[in-house]
Structures are given as C-alpha cells and as structure tokens.
Image (cartoon, rainbow, N blue to C red; front, top):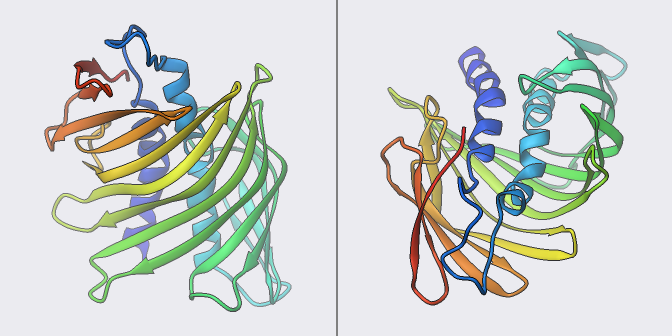
Amino acid sequence: MKNLKLIFKKLCIVLPVFFLTYSCSDDESANEEVVFTETELKAVLETDDITGGVDIALYDLFSNQNSTGKSTNEECYSAVYSDTGYTATFNNCVLNGTASVNGTLTVTYDQQGEAGSFTASYVDFYVGETKINGSRSYVFSTNTDQSSITFEVTSDMMVEMEDGSIISDNGTKSTTITFEDTPTYSIDGTWTVVYEGNTYNVMVNSSLTSGIGCNYISSGDMNISKNGLSVNVDFGDGTCDDVATLTYPNGVEEEITLRD
C-alpha cells in the first residue's frame, strides 16, 4: 500500500502535466472549416487538470478510513468519518505543484455498489482562484494479481475560471496504472465539455498511454467533435516525444507539437 500511495502521489504531479500537454503549438488549422484553438483544446481537459490532485487525496483518505467519529490528518487535508462517508477539509493545500486548494467536500460511500466506490460533492470548492461545483463519483478496482489498479471517475462538474469563463464537464474517464519495472498509466473514456457556447464531445479510441516518467502522451488516439465536426489526434507509437498527428475530416493531416 505504501508503494501504491507513492505512485499516486507522483501521479498527482504528473497527470496534470499529462493533460496540459495536449494543445497545439500553433493555432492555425490545416482545414479552415474546422478550427481548434489552443484555448479550446485545453478547455476539453481542464477539469481533470484542476481536480487531479484532489482525486488522489480523496483516494488516500478513503484508504485510511477510520471508525465513525474518528478523524485523519494528512499534511494539509483532513477527514472526519461517519458510517455513510466522510467530510474532507482542505486548507491551503498545494496538490498540483501550483494552486492552493481550499474548501470542504462531502464524500458518500456507495452502499449498494462495488467496494471502493464513493461520490464527492463539490460546493464552491476552490483550486487557486477557480471555483468548482458538482459531483465526481469514483470506483477503484485491481486485477486478480494486483499488478494494476483502475481509477474510474464519472463527473458532472461546473468550473468557473479566474477570468469568469465557465466550463461544464460530463462523462466518464478511467486511469489504469500498471505496476511493472517501469510503471505505466493509460486513460480511456468519453465525455462532453461545453465552453463559450461550443460543445465538445471527446472519445478515446485507443488508450492514451505513457510511462509515469514521461510528461507527454506517447501512444493512443482520440476524436474530438466540436459542434458535430470531428478531428482525430494520434499520439504516436509509444515514443516519449512532444509530437502528435491531427487528422481533419477531409483526410488532411497536420503534425502538431505539444507544449510543456
């Protein structure tokens, strides 16, 4: 369990970078009829970038659950447990390497579902100057020989950015961590984002995969549909680099560079 926690703590730093690296280095498109800007591409993955560190902390608190009425303190966050869940409080936590996390989350165990499942409710919860409302439901599972763990999250979130812009995020994403000589992680899922009047539907076709030590998605592909027009992003053959291929509906391909 200690090794698992160490890996999750590292993911708290790595996964936000993983999500943020998905953006074009150039906002110009090879197809004038379908334009995806850097700002839009970042918005598609913004919610997970913001909440990634909180997800890990909630898993940590869930793993250390105590008897009813007892409490747990882990650095800058704590929890008080009941029969039905726990209340988690964050006080100026820096979980993603930059923004301070503040607020209280109500976590409810799924009494009817799988072991290792719960829902966290966000009410005016802050990561830096970003305000979050909504819910995230979690299911954790391991394979029979415990060589991997899957972290599935279903979101219904509303995020208000510092500049006042609103991002809504609905859907399910799962992260699988495989424990090998060189641990890897992969992301699957489908979700919908609404941002500045546009709707973006995202579908992962082939798992977005990389080694924990790599800051870029190194393989896999996903489709992003903006108001019904779809483009494909292919992240390559497993090489840890900052290159991906964007394919437009007319078959035109554009090589893009992912930013740090």
